[in-house]
Amino acid sequence: MAPLISHIAHLGLLEAQAYQQSACFEAGVQFARSEGIVPAPESTHAIRGAIEEALRCKREGRAETILFCLSGHGHMDMSAYQAYFDGRLGDQGYDERELGLALSMLPQVAA
Image 1 (cartoon, rainbow, N blue to C red):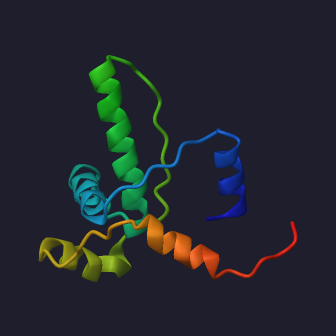
Image 2: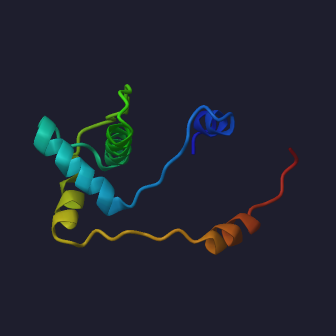
């Protein structure tokens, strides 16, 4: 995570969300079909977040401005899209134990 992003998250200026890869690629395909732009896989996470926010606004009857970053096209990532369409793109679980173990192996440094 970039230091600036971590800092503004710590300040409460943004709220981080995590989505499974398959849901993100689904959003990327939906975006490509409606906008004519194949998004880079990294951008599909932002698109999934924008869709979720739009659905939340719809449920709540609210009109809000939703901004997301489309950081690039996915023309160089067609193999990832092919894996998605072939059902070979798997979702990874998040394991707090593994994270704790990895963090415990980091060297201690003075603050």
